[in-house]
Amino acid sequence: MIDRRKVIVLYWGAASFVVALLVWWAFFFGRQGTLLAERMRAAGVQLDDHQAAALDKAVSESGRMFLSEGGTLCALLLVSMWFVMRTLTRELALERRQKNFLSAITHELRSPIASARLYVESVLLGRADGPKRDRYLQRAMLDLDRLRTRVDDLLETARVNSSKPVLALEPIDLATVARDVVERLTREHAARGARIELATEPDVHVRADMRALDTVLANLVSNAIKYGGKDPRVVVGTGHARSKALLFVRDFGPGLGGADPKRIFEPFVRGDDDDVRAKGGVGLGLYLVRELVTAMDGRVRAEDGLEGGGTRIEIEFARAEAKP
Amino acid sequence: MSGEKLLVVEDEVHLAEVIADNLELEGYSVDVVGDGLEALDRIRAAPPALVLLDVMLPGMDGFGVCATLRAEKVDVPILFLTARSDADDRIRGLELGGDDYLGKPFELRELMLRVAAILKRAQWARSKTTFGDRLVLGEASVDFKTYAASVGGKVYQLSTKEILILRALAEHPGDVISRAEILERVWGYEAFPTERTIDNFIVRLRRLLEPDPQNPRYIHTVRGTGYRLTP
Image (cartoon, rainbow over all chains, first blue to last red):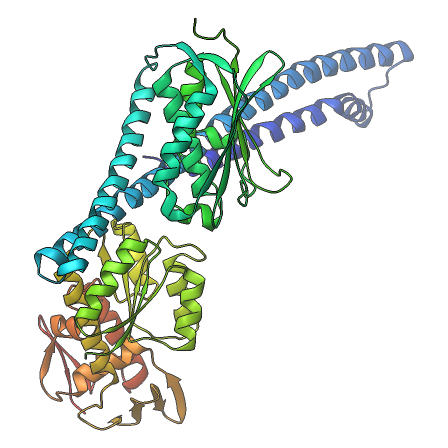
């Protein structure tokens, strides 16, 4: 495959040459009248006033024609250059993101396999007895759970990507979903010292798919815990704004570290700072959130640089009537 | 070899624990850190006998840690342990000065073998030479303690690899030492460099130590086999 960077450089080279040529032609035709008059004078041709005026007129008319046609050509060329460059740059960015994704997914899948394997191998080789043996097997189980979660995320993303998600929309009270997810994740993340608080308003009803909403919220809360700093604190809330129903997840960690709040929902995008990379993850969680929310006719956005630090992810749905 | 101090640099808590436990069972004394910058500080303060270094780390990645140490002339042996095990990463790690590279997931026994092999090589490099600390080749003399070569009143600094290759040859003067044996001694049993790499090192050594590098008097090539040193 030809290196795209080389293509970009070649394209820029060729396009710059054409633009420079057009500019030179414009300059050349602009001076055409003066040059012609000088040559005629040098050849001893004398023009009377009438002839000189006619010559000036003819030269300036053709000059205007060349300038307007050349200018249009130049403008078209510049616009096409901009389009081509934009496409190539996007393609390069996508390629870079996919490479990052492959590297991240390799790390994410191989690390739990590696540790589970070593724990089990240690037990099989008789290198861990009694309580140590039990601890090793429990750790291996946790590694396998971690692996399962990551594989599930990947499969869910592939499913969402390959076709429009099949959803069963029904009237749901957001506070109920929030409470269920918070209870479950509080148990799962107890060992990490995570504190998950509920700040729900009652009667915030929407039409959504229960399973998809659960996946969305669980992803957001897990993300908030992961990037929430030491002893992470996360607030899950619901509320109303104008005619909309709101569901939000707020953490008090270091925030997005300069990442664009709009871009974090794109696939394979992860923050650039070391801390984010070190936390693992493949950059699909928030993409999955956006796809599912969009499929439920909702909108999701991230807010950074909040007072008290951290990031707030807010989902907006149309309000619905409560379940009869 | 037991009791040697090893440093495991790994941010995956489970992996760090099971590696450290198993190394301790072998009799090594093991420290664990989960951050690249902290690892650098630890190694600078007290270089361990071997560093088992992950690549994807917070603070500074493993490649950065290795490159920084080598730039500071810290010669601690490094075994990369990483999930990024495609050929490019492998080559990069070894080019930056890593001693060996093990892709995750790996077998416990293989890890133990590799650790022992690197430590054995490092021990050989540190041990007293069988021919004293100085090798004299005509006008040139090489000091195996300071890695300095004096040639016609000028002093040149040799690299660790150059010193080790010279040592492998000088310990058996007059004998043919095969390229494979040099690779095993200097690089390790699953060596990354090709035999051609050794030829390049030999060319550099000849340029430095031989009066006429085109017609060597001391470091001879034995066609198809290896090299022979005749002091």
